[in-house]
Length: 315
Image (tube, rainbow, N blue to C red; front, side):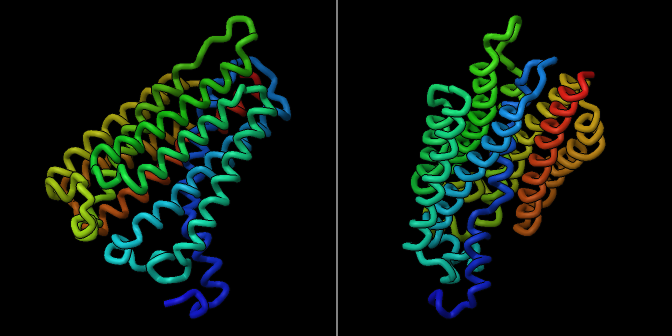
C-alpha cells in the first residue's frame, strides 16, 4: 500500500506513533533525574535551572525519537511479521520519508544539546552526549540488535550514560560552590535502571521470536527459548528493584517518591519480575515491557518533582 491510500489524519497519527513519545520522555527524565538529584542542597533555584531541566528532557526526547524512527527502518522486515500494524509495514510512512524524518530529529537533538552547552558553559558535554548516545542507538538499530544479549547490554549502558550525564552536568555547573561534591546517587540509580532496561529488552524478544528467527536476530529468546529467557530477564529486574529501594532509602527527605515507590512502583515491579517466570506468552511479555516503561517514568518524575519542591521550601 502507498501513503496516498490513507487519510491525512491516519498519516499524521503514524508520524506521531513512530516517535514512541513515552520512550522519549523516559530518556529525557533519566537525564533530568541526574541533573536535578545532583543539585546541591540549600541552593536557590533560578530560571536558568528550570530552563535547563526542560531543555535536558527535550534533548533526551529528541535523541530517543530519532532512534525509534531508525529502529523502525532497520526492523521493517521483522515488523512485517511481528508488528504489521506499525507505520512503515502498513505503508503509511515510506522508508525514504522515515529517513528524512529521522535526520530532522538528529538535527533537533544536536541543536538542543548545543543550546544547553552554550547556556550553561558545559564545554560540549551535552553535544558529545547526544552525539554518542544517538549514534550508538542507531548502531544498535542496524547492527548490534542482531547480536542479541550484547545489543541488549548496549541499551543498558546508554541508560546509565544518561544518569552519568546528569551528574557531570551539575558538577560542572556547581563545582565552585564550597563543599560541593560529585553526586554518586544518580549513578547508583543509573546502574539499576540500566539493568532494568536490559531485562526489559530481553523480555521484548519473547513476542518477536518468529520474526527475529526469520531475520537472523540472535536474541536470548531465539537461542534459549521462553523459560530461560524469563529467568535471565527476571534477574536483571531484581537488580532494578534493589536499586529502587536504595534510591528511596537514600532520598528519605523526598516524601512523595518514597511513598509512591514503596506502595506502587516497586511492588508492581516485583510482581512483574515474578510473573514473567510463570507466563512468557507474547501478550503478557508485551504488557510487561509496557508497564515497566511507565514505572520508570513515574519513578523518575516523582523524584525530580520531590527534589525541586525540597529545594524550593528548603526543608
